[in-house]
Amino acid sequence: MDIKQLRYFIAIAEEKNITAAASRLHMSQPPLSMQLKQLESELGVKLFDRSGKRMELTDKGEVLYKKALHLVNNLEEIKNEIQETEQGKKGVLALGINTLSLSGFSEVLQSFHKKYPSVSLKIVQNDSNYLAEMVKTRAIEMAFVRLPLEHHGLIYQHLMNEPFYFVTDKETSTISLEEVSQIPLIIPSTEGLGIYSTILEAFTKQNLQLNKMAECSDMNTLMDLVKGGIGATIVPKSVLDVYGDKQLCSIPICNTNMASSLGVIWLENHYVSTPAKKFIRLLKEL
Image 1 (spheres, rainbow, N blue to C red):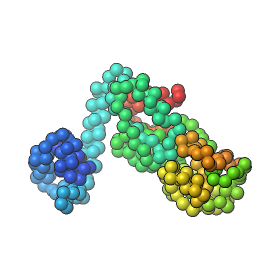
Image 2: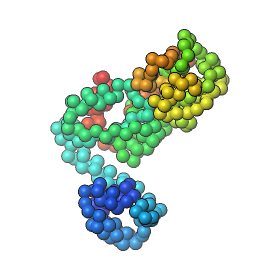
Image 3: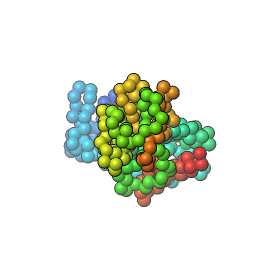
Image 4: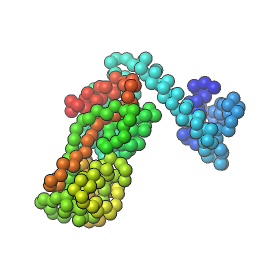
């Protein structure tokens, strides 16, 4: 068993199809099938259950996939660390960004690309908890997330706090959290995740009941629902910057210090690439 076989195995596991994996690896199907057969023979186990053209990992295959992915990512990291040249002007930077996007993030990416055009960017968008797991498995190097977040084993560097706004399709001049508690809300997250927890905590501190009618992690859909009069919402300011609409009324909530903490995470006690360091520096400057 060698690293090449493990790369082949990972491709098959992720594509769930020999033909698709061969295409991804830029090779023909017969040699790839032979490599898999040799790997299963050497290990003396069945790695895949086959159902027509679809291939699913067996329990032993799942174990090998996790170990192989860890090993291959480690090897790539070692290679990148050793071969990194030109003070971070070359390489690959894999980033994660929270589903509730940072306003101006695309402008930061454009600025970074202009300054370091030879650095290839890989960008993943998902909720903060999922991104944290991706950092831990080294699928991405760092991620921009929102607290609260369990970040054991991760370095968290705070970037900024931003206030929450009440958003409705009705004209409103001022509103308190107590008044908001009487209005059906669409929460911009799902239960147990950062933004949801922050909103719930604010209501709990004032002994108020959260009048939740729906949850939605897609901001375009959420704003459309509010415009349609389905309910109101509470969102961080950056969400308004990205998804706000002139048809909607957005105002700060009186007598509450509800805020969202934005920061960047990376793996603790672990090598951070020069492109990653330069990206964080640029973000702070902008």
